[in-house]
Amino acid sequence: MAYISFKPIDYFSTLLYTGTGSSNALTGVGFQSDLIWTATRNEAEIHPINDSVSGISSYLRSNDTDSLETGQTQTITAQSSDGYTVGTEDRFNQSSNTFVSWNWKAGTSTGLDFSAGDITPSAYSVNTTSGIGIYKYTGPGTVGGDTLAHNLGATPKLVIVKQLTDAYSWAIQHNSVANTKILNLDNANASATNDAFHNTYPTSTLITLGSSTYTNAAAGTKDYIMYAFTPVTGYSHFTQYLGNGNADGMFINTGFEPAFLLVKCSSTTSGGAGNWYIFDSKRAGYNIANYSSKANDTDAEATSAYLDLLSNGFKIRNAAADLNGSGNHYSVMAFAKNPIIGQGGTVGVAR
Image (cartoon, rainbow, N blue to C red; front, side, top):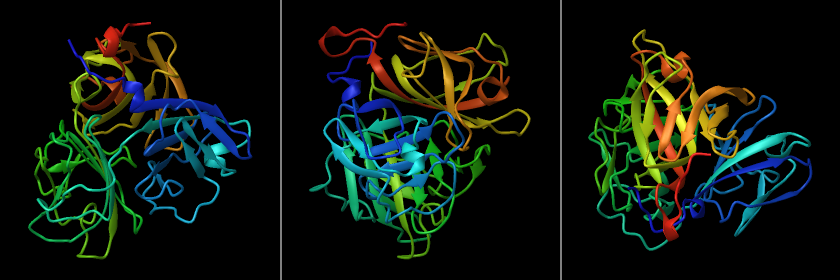
């Protein structure tokens, strides 16, 4: 059975709220967030991503290639030990609009040793308990591949990089996709060949970058943000499944009751692709996760019988090609609501 000695909600939390159009102090996150991903639920809007390393008031867009939006005064204006305050910016707080935000806690931001790699981040936040690292760095641009010592103590299975300086697509390395290929968070494309990670998976100490503009442009000219995740048994899981094209779809064992799922079709039998679907337990109705957002699109929240969230994983209940095309491969990023057995004997159960 999957067992962890901490509560998942201390490191990942979903928040639902309604915009006020004026300063809005949000509580109920449970910690001070280092990574905040927001989506407007009821109308089309960009999906901002804020992090404490780039500057919590600045943001990127998961659905776009735009560079880091800096100098913002009305996005996230303050933080507390249980949430944060949003200003008057519509994409965070438009009056009467409904919002969802997904929040991760990182941690250590000083004192780490990066000398084992070629890159020393200018800022970082790392948590070995929950397996998340956030790093801001300037690309050295070495053709032979540059390395970053991630300090996570285990091998990352998901690495996400976005250039901050210029408009350029997101680059994602997922352990279910060949190391010669990447995915792009901002579009629905299938995995494509690219040297962004030097055709090399991470190790327990290093993440390797190629000479691609996605991750490592000409020496000293571009800044980047990197989000790296290591799997933690009972808390996070990065895997893949094979679609069967049937509404009675596959069951995927994560070892915990999921609080958050990100699902992407990475390869198809017909050469097509699929959207990045986000599900969470806060918007789910009992077992059925019937609300979804698309990371790569500005669409409002969609409703359908997508999948069941269960005590030990999830089961697909939809035959759509984006989620369950016959013979298609799907990459998964999952975080726990409850492990099967967690701290104090708390048991993850279906609802």
